[in-house]
Length: 182
Image (cartoon, rainbow, N blue to C red; front, side, top):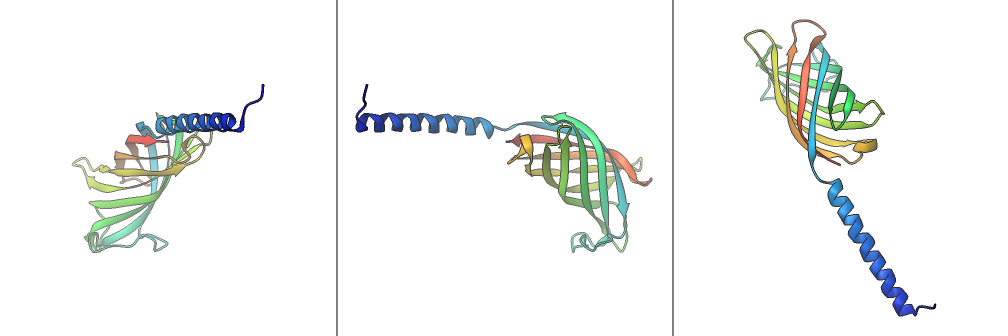
């Protein structure tokens, strides 16, 4: 049976409209926020003063600076088991000294899932000394992208943790809790 050009054009328009509607549903489902909770046991090698000059003191944080290299293992949702790496800039609030309270930040937090997919974020926060001599970490993170299942990911949340900085490398744990869109 032959269709007229008008009929075919109408059919093509309907198919295109249906495909666009289906794609919009897929995008809406893709961008729907889902919970992100990840906890990792970490070690951090802290070098005072910051060796490369990339981490500088500021008017708000006039003390000495340090670079912290973080590595560890964790588990979370939706990532499962993961390896964690990051490079911190740590700034002391006490002029001329490196002693808490600290301000810390990083633009290089990477969570790598077992299958190699990566979730990338940046974070900032503060570290205060507890009565037991542990550094209490509080802050926030923002997801900046990723690879594989996390390609184009976004989201944000809070960061918390505890770190023993008396020994080197320092050891402790960190938890990210928030939402992810992908």
